[in-house]
Amino acid sequence: MRRSTWKKRKSIIMGMICLLLFVQEAPYVSADGKTDAYHYSFWGDAVPSPAAYEATTIITGKKLNTTPMKEPSDMHVTANQHVFVLDSGNGRIIEMDRNFKLVRTIDSFEQEGKEDHFKNPQGLYVTEKGHLLVADSDNHRVVHLDEQGSSSRSCLNRNRIC
Image (cartoon, rainbow, N blue to C red; front, side):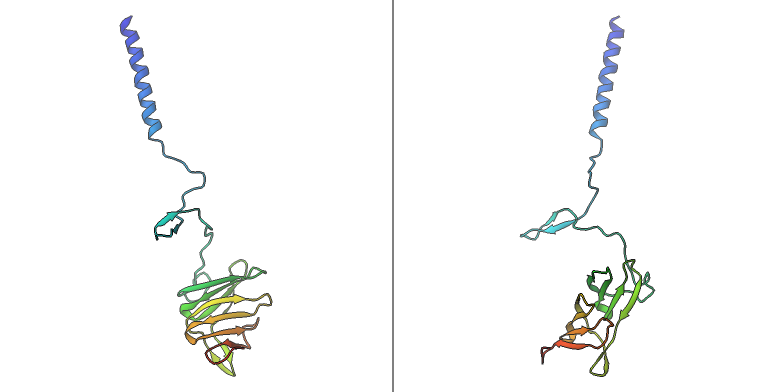
């Protein structure tokens, strides 16, 4: 009888040891999923932080049936949910509708009766009326385009302020 009692105890102890081993090896689970978001502290160290946003789709020039984007630097979404992307490397503005379908591309405009182009633009703003203000950096000016993308004028350059 003593042997069978000893075997029972031994089986129970082995079962408990196995149970403890399995419990310790269980991976930790997070309810919010894995994010690699971070910000920099005052001292310049990367500090994990909650993600401010999550990309749901990626838009490329190929998806828009146009040339590849080269250094997109700014974006503006209007009240009617049109998306304007400033493609600095190509010196153009790409306008898309709410479904990310290409509406138009503005890569040139008329300036004092002559065709003009952006040169390394870095900032974009769209007014409520649909007028575009573009910080045309290497031309040292702010360009104002109407809702059609034409009838422009330089609002600010080295020589004058409009």
